Length: 106
Image 1 (cartoon, one colour):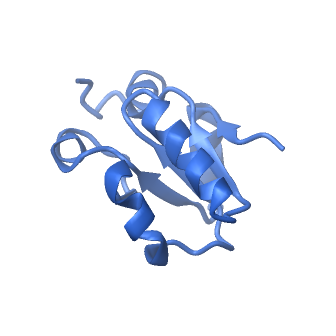
Image 2: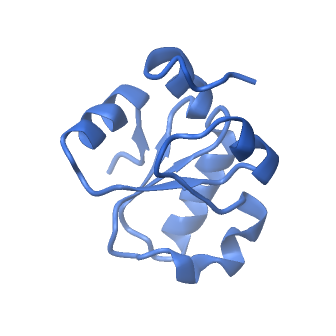
């Protein structure tokens, strides 16, 4: 199974109305700078204690600044039994460059 998704694939799925839980694993100060509308902030360091906020049956797309922390989050969630988790390749930076130029880059 493929555990990654591109920003273009995510945008297309969102435009189609697909139900996707956007999990932003960055820090609160990063989230305040730039975010994808509808994303839920759960910083990576707090993720192990925040699993009750996630539905294991829902599709989850993890994102961060460039895709490294969200890759860690994706791996962690898969280990915890979450079957439908994907890492957003390139993170919010790629989203800003390829999809929504109004999202600030940092």
